[in-house]
Length: 95
View (cartoon, rainbow, N blue to C red):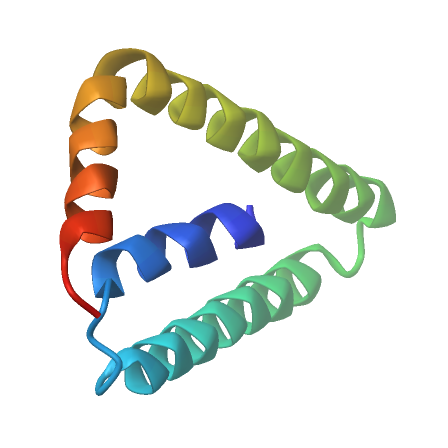
């Protein structure tokens, strides 16, 4: 999932090398903050119930991986032509 999201950010940035470090930095910061807050609140609310915490910490990432796979497949199935045109357009630009 991390590789897919980083690749999507790379596609959005394209050839704009002036702001790419800032965009990647913000993405990394927000990713770390959101994961930290989620773990903090999960542990705070479910610290007394180890079974529920174990269930949440194992099921949520697996569900997210399946969801990412589904949405990536849907993106390729529904928008393959548009993505190919975008990709070809980025290769035609002078560097």
